[in-house]
Image (cartoon, rainbow, N blue to C red; front, side, top):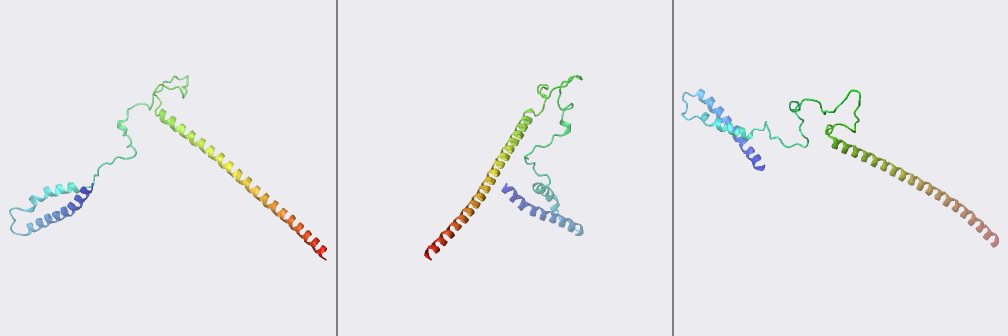
Length: 173
């Protein structure tokens, strides 16, 4: 791959210089009274064509793509998408078609199972989140209640300490 790019980089300037020389010689040949017996126009155009083919990038190679190309309509067989036997008075149940008449049956089943799995996971995550939020709210309420209880105990303790201090002052006096 690297060699092809290097070859292109070398040959493209060479081909342009050869083309300019051909143009110059054809112009000078018309103005000069004599023509050389071996003009450059005899051997350059074949070389020019080969060099041009080497450096031409208008039609690059088709690379393999990650998605398949769509089928042309002319290659699709004529007729309905799927043959299902049908009598006018009786409806056919969706779980009882002709054998092999439902296209992409396994793929549809896989899609359905995947969708059901995603929905189940979503429901599970939702219940987990609800449970986590509920626990978080309970812990917050417990922390607030503990803070209120600490404040109440501290207030009672302060009242007790003031009473003890007053008793001590009375006994000292």
